[in-house]
Length: 201
Image 1 (cartoon, rainbow, N blue to C red):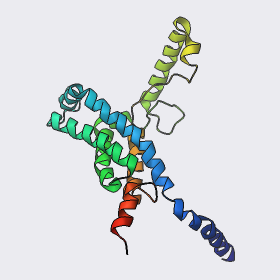
Image 2 (image 1 turned 180 degrees about the vertical axis):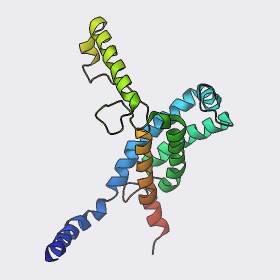
Image 3 (image 1 turned 90 degrees about the vertical axis):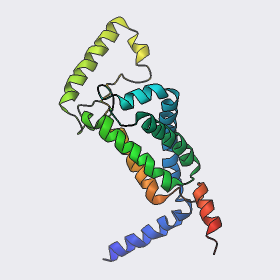
Image 4 (image 1 turned 60 degrees about the vertical axis):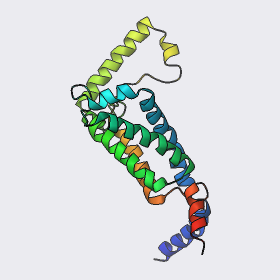
């Protein structure tokens, strides 16, 4: 028991001093998520008619009701949400609709593709489709090696096969969930300074 007691004394002595900069964690999450939602939202705005068609078409799209409204809500939520996350304003509030957009993406778009964002036979999330995808990737590499400038094409990284699974959507959802509970964080968010201003004792 003495060992455990000494451990927690050391633990508290070290980590209680990090409280002042605890806002760095939420800041890192917000800065990571900002370009994710900014790009997603502005892409929807720039190609709005195509997004509406994809949202509404039940043959090759999502088959959602009121596709214009749904596309507008998704684009607006992601674009405005990105800005609010960046400055740390209304962080908990904006995390809610952004989590909803992630749930829609997970279940309506990516669910049938399994877990993996990129096919990998060595991952626990591999499915029966992965082996076929890896075989196709191998064939594509062979064609490029024979007919393309393969060294130039792979100079900055290997060619991969996209699986479009739920991995990224779940990752963003978990990050937003953390922000929902933590808020914008100390020192580095507008929320923090507004809270200090309006809760002076």
